[in-house]
Length: 293
Image (cartoon, rainbow, N blue to C red):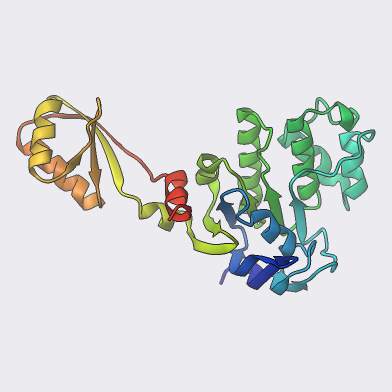
């Protein structure tokens, strides 16, 4: 049975007289990457802060089997975190930051290399760009090889190459058993590597499922290139398929069985199918559909 690293039950939070979290509950298993997504102000950062015990809240939170509460310190061997913006001392170098917080220095140079920070790691942090500071914040979250890592908008300020490097590092650490809870507005990026998705709307969990299950509920959009696109449109429209009015030949199917039936119909008319492209679901579309209801 997979080990449960994070357990959140009945998490509620109010600021003054306004409740902002409502009975939030979800889990994170060992080695899983959980995407926490929602609109601005949905409560994502508040959930992360409550999990870490940085703000007062009601409910139960356990990390690696240990109860967490307000001002109850969490061992850095259990948890690493980057919330909002990294706390950086401007006149210390990146290396000095890592040395200050590292329990063991053996991973330091390896982590710096993986995040492509070697060129500037010995410069004062006040010389860093936003992306450099962000990578330092991620490195600080990972330096002690914790069991569970929380990253709040970790791709903020990163260029495409740095985003890819971060994704590769997260996937590599997850394969070793580290669990991640990650928020990001770059949903197309999260779709590439997250295992599970928790969607938040106005402080409530509106969806909690695996990424595969969530995207499987999307309709299939099929793009075809045939020897006779005009006739193919007529054949499929006559068979009650939804054929989009686009320059490319696109049809909407509910299931893979519908796709196979469409292909048979076309081929029976002697039309050659030259190319076929299936979309794999769209996390952004699915999330927007849920939070805009």
